[in-house]
Image 1 (cartoon, rainbow, N blue to C red):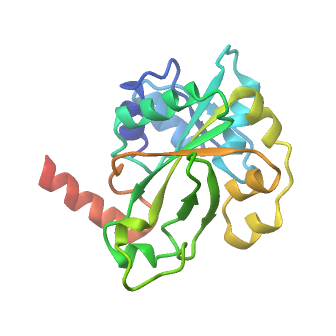
Image 2 (image 1 turned 135 degrees about the vertical axis):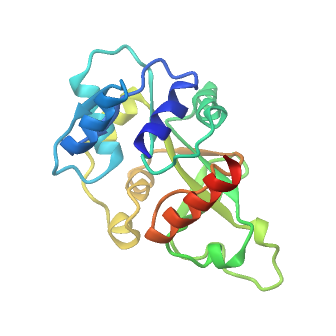
Amino acid sequence: MIQRVYEQATKSNLTEVIVATDDQRIADVVVGFGGRFCMTDSELQSGTDRCAETLDKIETNADIVINIQGDEPFIDPSTINMLIDSFSNPNAEIATLYTHFAKFEDVESANRVKMVIDKNDSVLYFSRSVIPHQNPQADVSVYKKHIGLYGYKTSVLKQIKKLKISSLEKLEKLEQLKWLQNGFSIYAYSCNDVGIAIDTPEDIVKAEIFLKQNS
């Protein structure tokens, strides 16, 4: 799965692709397929923290850092490019993506993060609960499914890595709420669904079926 994510990322407009990990087994796999990795502290709590530590360890002049989850084997390079291009908005400190739900059962799942945004594409809130309130008469496409990809201005990433866990982050187990609580803006843009993210053992089965059907 790591190799698939890595290879998709290298097809995008990213200038460097680095796997940030604390597991030597993953590092060995990355070396095996000719990729680049950075070993990070095993005590780090999030992908954002790993990105920040990697930024500290490597030499780069990058203005933007893109955090791609290692469990998105079907990520499209054009989706990554969309996130990169979102920083043409001079107000963007942090950027992310979303798509629209197709089934209410997915909206109701705590493993699928929901979000609401304002008219300027700025995120108001993220939640594992159904937001806005579930209305039986509402079309399912009203609900926005967060895609777990983030882009940060390098200067902002250096700031948010210093933040302590916030009350909302602790309740929802969503690190991005810490950024909102501390006054950072997060812009979100609509994209095509990235496919099957591997969040549960059941998702692995779905991914294997998808690969067989599309091989």
